[in-house]
Image 1 (spheres, rainbow, N blue to C red):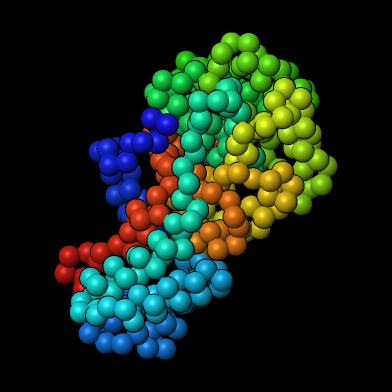
Image 2 (cartoon, rainbow, N blue to C red):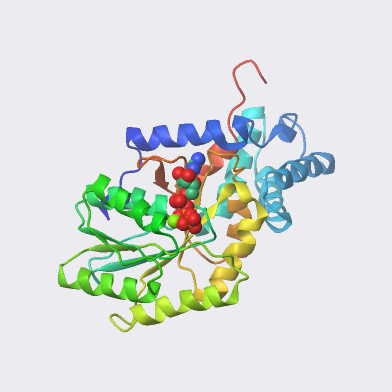
Amino acid sequence: MPADADTGTPARRGFFARLKDKLNQGRGLGVALDWLAGRKLDDAMVEELEAELLAADVGIEAADAVVARLRKLAGARPIGSVADARQVLREAIAGVLAPRAQPLVIPSAPRPFLVLMVGVNGSGKTTTIGKLARRYQQAGLKVMLAAGDTYRAAAIEQLQAWGERNGVPVVAQQPGADPAAVIYDAFAAAQARGIDVLLADTAGRLQNKGPLMDELRKVVRVAQRLDPAAPHEKMIVLDASLGQNAVVQAREFHAAVGLTGITMTKLDAGGKGGVLLALAEQLPVPFRFIGLGEQAGDLEPFDAQEFAAALVPDPPAGGG
Ligand SMILES: Nc1nc2c(ncn2[C@@H]2O[C@H](COP(=O)(O)OP(=O)(O)OP(=O)(O)O)[C@@H](O)[C@H]2O)c(=O)[nH]1
Ligand SMILES: [Mg+2]
């Protein structure tokens, strides 16, 4: 898919440089390892590192997984400098994240490829749709949006504004309409019009509200009348600043509709980033994109190595 084959472009390098500055306010992990150089990884160091990991929202299971990988790596090669120690920690972290780093590929069939966005209120679903619309359009795909958040007129207008900005059609009905009907109609229209990617918005909902989760299951069922494989992507959008709570949300939405992708937003806004390690360890759902702001360009496919490098930055010059 051309949109995701752009690793190494200046824009992408700039994005990950910004991620490094934003995560933990650039402080990063690995301070506990600064004195590892030339020494053995001892229990005191491990304890301090675990505390750092937990403070960064990594959670116990993933902290254990990182430490286990670190011990293995540190045992297998000499660590002569602080830079070596940081590199080993980056590798341990990347090792935990790597199995989930699976970019969203839009295959040549089936088309239209239906992406259903789900998540709690305010996580960034509608904004992410706007960003993806631009991304896929720039990749030469025909994009359409479905205003499946029918709870508020403002939600429909917000999606229409993104549609206008990108010059992509938006299928919408009146506030209060049945979201399943809106998305069904949009899917049928997208089929008729030869659309490649249909991005369907939904209203924010708390994972413990049964009737709202039923509504989401209905959206899925109704879309399947047009294509039994639809929605081809069921993407949850999670707010990184919610920390471990994001893991709870992902688990519950996964149980309800069977997620196929995770997009993590707001890593620029207090999100510590460790939550991705917790998710990697606890859920078998691929990481698709990460969001770093409110603008259309503030979204990139997830990359395990780049993310680990951002979590464990080099200390500022002169800062040891
Ligand atoms: N800083 C920052 N803000 C973001 C990001 N993504 C979204 N936002 C902002 O978060 C707020 C909520 O975003 P929406 O896209 O409306 O969230 P939503 O999930 O559609 O919200 P509901 O429809 O109410 O459930 C908006 O002010 C966005 O501009 C991000 O990556 N970083
Ligand atoms: Mg919304």
